[in-house]
Image 1 (cartoon, rainbow, N blue to C red):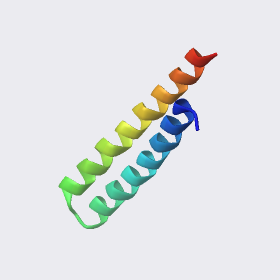
Image 2: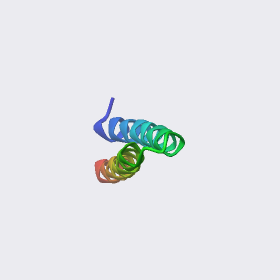
Image 3: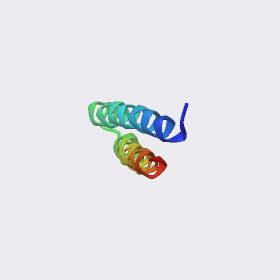
Image 4: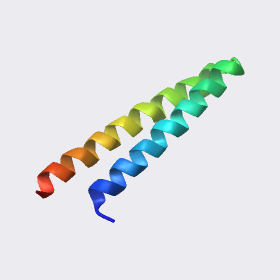
Length: 59
């Protein structure tokens, strides 16, 4: 698997995982878990964008 595709896939995974944590934090009234989820979701978006940039640069 190309590194760009891997970055995009991992980025999507982290976005979903972050969203789950964020919702779980809201439901359980746990601001720390909610913040972790938000941070992980943002990190996933960044990783996905890095994968897109790598894909463009490979061409």
